[in-house]
Length: 331
Ligand SMILES: Nc1ncnc2c1ncn2[C@@H]1O[C@H](COP(=O)(O)OP(=O)(O)OP(=O)(O)O)[C@@H](O)[C@H]1O
Image (cartoon, rainbow, N blue to C red; front, side):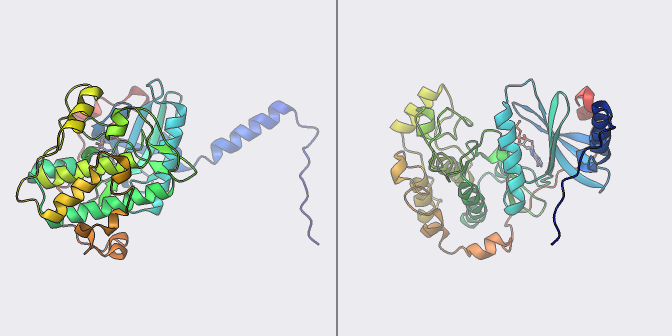
């Protein structure tokens, strides 16, 4: 029988020699994707609370990537960074999530190398169009639903779903991004989270009230996104403190313009239920709502639906003014 043997350490080598050899070996096998010198920064794509997202060119494959650069000294904790990196790695399993090609760090920065979504954000598309027609809302809703349900299967609550974090690829398919505030639980969403987290105007009442919540919060935010696609506006005012926003939500009902079709109105109303237990996504599967009854989910998952709107492709030309704001460590 072929037995595995443990390799013995050579006794004549000093521990310093062994360490040096190990260090040399580690340096020698650093994959090119984890070497900062292989990325040339092109321009800034966006900036959030924790750092910048830059368009970069990956020299080895001559490919454009989005590089998220987080300064370690900013408030993001080690746990949050690890969570975001882990979810970005999940992205390769679902076509509607931004995926990471690599994640690495320097002394002061954490870097995520992500696929570059060239079609801009859903926010830009809504601003450009004013509002979407029913079939357009249905297309984006279906792709977001598959993305959200995939996250929930892995116990992930996004907690920051808004049109600025819903990106589009060059064909116009959805790519959910920004998992910086996401929570993961191994017991598939059964856990409740706390903490007021998310963008003003998109946070669920249970989040604003600082009570326990889970995936219900993402379904509410999704309801706000659907309302915004259908009307071009937010259903509730995002102004004021969390307490004020909560009061507005609890005391008011959104206005639905007449042109919004009844099934779409009902879809939004079911998602924007103030009582968590009655909310669509919590009490019933979103896919079963009549507004989505004509959707062929198998085709959605296989990216077979034709995007109804062509996004404006963002130019990938070097922008020197933006390049000047690159952290010195990366220039
Ligand atoms: N993969 C990508 N491809 C193209 N653009 C991107 C990509 N990732 C992010 N962006 C752009 O950068 C912006 C900010 O990205 P992101 O939301 O991930 O950063 P953040 O620092 O976590 O922001 P926030 O403070 O909103 O949480 C996005 O709104 C988008 O415009």
